[in-house]
Structure formats: C-alpha cells, structure tokens
Amino acid sequence: MLPWLVTTWQQLSALLSRDQLAHALLLTGPDGIGKSSLANHLADAILCTASSRPCGQCKSCLLRRAGNHPDLLVLDSSASSIGVDAVRQLSHFLHGSAQQQANKVVLLTQAEKLTESAANALLKTLEEPPKHSFIVLTSAAAAMLPATVLSRCQKWPLAAQFGDNTQQWLAHQTNRSVPDFLLAYCAGAPLKALQLIESGAADTLQDGFNSLQQYLAGAVSLTSCVKQLDSIAELTPLLGWFLRQQLLPGMLNKEPAKQLALQQLYSRWCRDEKQILGQNKQLALTAMLISLKRLSR
Ligand SMILES: [Zn+2]
Image 1 (cartoon, rainbow, N blue to C red):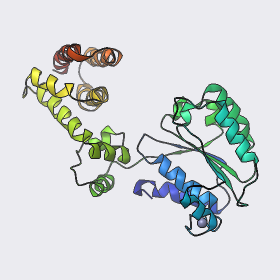
Image 2 (cartoon, rainbow, N blue to C red; image 1 turned 120 degrees about the horizontal axis):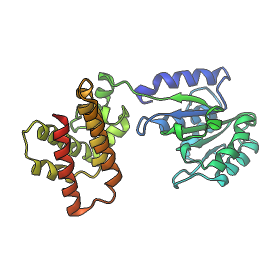
Image 3 (cartoon, rainbow, N blue to C red; image 1 turned 90 degrees about the horizontal axis):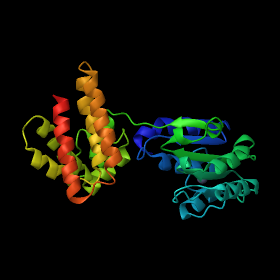
Image 4 (cartoon, protein in one colour; image 1 turned 60 degrees about the vertical axis):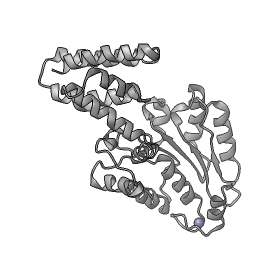
C-alpha cells in the first residue's frame, strides 16, 4: 500500500470487517494520488472470501490475481464520456447473483465523465443497491459530478503529506533527482511527480522554472528565457503554478490592480495558447514575459 494511503486503507478495511462499508464509495483526489491503486485494493478486499484484507490465497484472490474475477466489473472510462449503456451494464451486473457466493464490485474510474443521463440512470442503483454489491467510483474532478450522485456516495478524499516522508518516498523510487518544487507543483500527488521525474519532464520544468526566476531577477536575457520556455510542452500549467506560488503571494500587500492585471495576463495566455503556434508562439511569449516583468516589479 502506498504509504500516504495507509490510514485511509485501514479505515476502509475496518469498516469492511464490521460489515459497515458503504455500498457506494467515491475516492477523490488529484491525478497521481493513487485512487486507482486504492480502489483496486479495496475491490480485492471486498471480494476476498477469507478476510477483510486480501488474503492472496482464497479462490477469489487467485481469480483476481489471474485478472478474471467474475464478480468484478471494471467499467471502461477511456472514452471522452461514460454513457447510459455503461450504467445499464453496471446495473445488470449487480442484479445478477455472485458466482463466488460472496460480494460483487463495480469499479468506475474518472466518474466525472458520466453524462447527465448516465448519472441519472445511476441514481436508482445508488439508492437501492442490491445486497452484497459495492460500487467504487474515483474522480480527480468530483466537483463536476451532479449533486444527486455526490450525495448518494460516501466520499473519501485522498491526499499526501507534503512533508519529508513523501519526499523520501519519491527519492527511494527513482535514481534521478527530485526537484523541491515538484510535489507542490503536482498538487501533492506523488505518483504524478514520479511520472514527471521518470519521463524527464521534471528536469525540463525545473529549467523553465529557474529561467523564469532568473529572467525576473535580471540574471538571464529575455531571448534566452523565451527559448527555454518555448521548449516546454506543458508550459501553461507551469506558468499558472509560477504565478500562483511565486509571484502572487509576494504581491499580496501591494497594488491590487497589479495582481488583477497579472491574473488577466495569464487568463489571456490560457485563452490564446491553443492558437499560438510556431513563430507566433515566440512572439507571444516575448510579449507576455515583458508584461510579466513590468507587473512583478
Ligand atoms: Zn482472499
């Protein structure tokens, strides 16, 4: 179990052992916090016929390990939306009898993709779940779910501590260096941070971050900063983070007009970024950085 999820896992397992686990659970938290990992482990535990923690030895656990447990349905959430058909499949599955004479589980990840009609269709099952059935939903954007669905699920917000433990965990997972700002940049999601480190994207972000700081401090030229930033694929999230974490906090006691102008500068960038390509992107970056320096003084 991922160390920052241990406490939540222990609570869920205790509820399961007392037959008090809610029939509809919603695990929430940023991408890369481990929602799927916990949801899968919980499914193992619910299906295990020997214990409230997956024993790894009963027939259910062996079926799970083989990846073909008949009492588990994992709904496909790879498309851009989850429609009524998926919810019908869920309902049909849960109303059938369990093949291992125990519980049935449905995993529904990225639940925010439910269409309005699919969410409505789901309400009835959430209200009157068949006996021994559990629906585990996950979402990184739970606020996008209809209130009717939210109110019928028990919510489990997942988070990692920003402290030394998580930083140490990250350092243990990789041979590469772990930039100080990365965990905060990833909204505290260690798996997301790890993925950025392993793909090399964290180094690129670190270089962009340094370049922005140095440009504003007058230590590197505008041209060199533009060149550095232009090479970053995910520039907009980096800019947003830099403004929120680095610039705005230092301006809180200064002119509100400047803070507003800074936010407007970023909003404009977000709005235009998809249309700005090639040579135009460097021009747009140059103009944006000049405004940024003026506003940050
Ligand atoms: Zn088992």
